Image: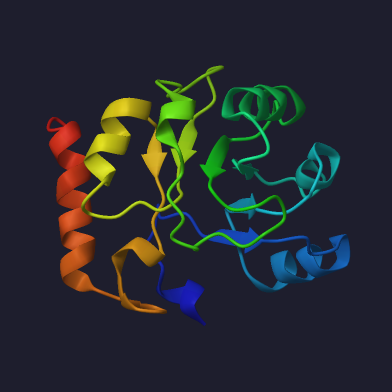
Length: 171
């Protein structure tokens, strides 16, 4: 029902975490998605089989060096529309509010010519510094703009956008 209200030229993204092929196909048949976003242990063959552009989340847990994880993901998911780096454990859920160690990423920005989406503990108070350091193509926020679990704050969302724009005033 929500998709019918999405304006033209706005992407409809389906978020998946370790669903099987049948579940993903069922959702694609029911909802006209324009992009798939995979956050689990899906391999590249699984992600590309649906014939839609996809984003692959890369877990930046403390057990792996960010540079090695990104390098491996850029190679394995070479046809991904973008890579999303997040602070959650591999196969775990995002939105934990755990801050990603941006120092590990450095200025990776568009790395291998593939857009990089930065997630992981972003808030209105830290997003400008994260954008300045990493220079991502986009940022992703969820719990960082909540006034209570699952309840977004309009004021926090506005401030978040203002902080991102402060690093890219011409955009």
